[in-house]
Length: 290
Image (cartoon, rainbow, N blue to C red; front, side, top):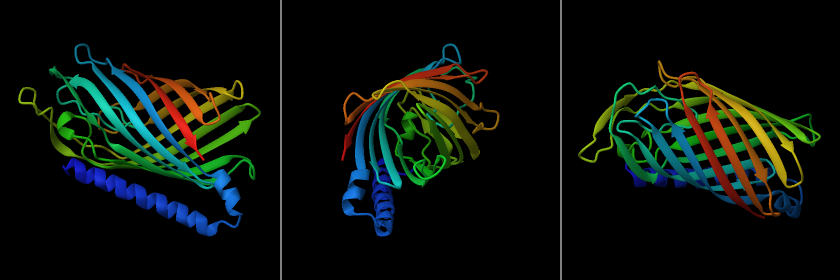
């Protein structure tokens, strides 16, 4: 396992490099006036809260609270995002927090419930717009994402290895209704055997081996007013572990733009995978900077 500070440094360097490379490429290709480019570009800062409950196995429940801090920079052709979550978690000893595209095995052994907190894995992504509805029949973009292993594995807050994702996203708006779909492929790192909850009382070793998987989603959003919209979706992912569960999640939410610069989003999600009992809820606040 690499030291935490080393992984955070890697995340920062990759963040700066990818942002500079993408926007430098676009700047060299632009032929529109500088004022037009500036008008199309903006940055967003966000903060959120998410609660996730796993009651699949009686007596072995896990609850996780995420408090993510996010930053996004959008230009005419690119969107760059980075998110750093702080995690407060109560779970059975030896149960490792995995990536959001994964589901896990059902717990078969009884372990002591332990509580841990700390910073989670940094997630960074770069999205490139390929088609836009203004000039074609739909919106189409390609997205690359990396989960950087900055979380403390001894606390069960991460797997200790990097994960990589590529995804194609499409959407089409008809009047006030927007349909969305995506398909992607995940290259998941395999950490092998790691020791978690190393507090002298509840030490556990767990061996993790992940498969590369396909994942995707379909969804819709409806504009109720200029400020308010509602959305619903379904996410699917192959089982990341042999003998593990697929990901099948239903979600719904609202998006409320309460000023020209501030947006509030609320979301609820429920796993519909047979054998799993997982649900969550989240809210986020964002502010736009031109």
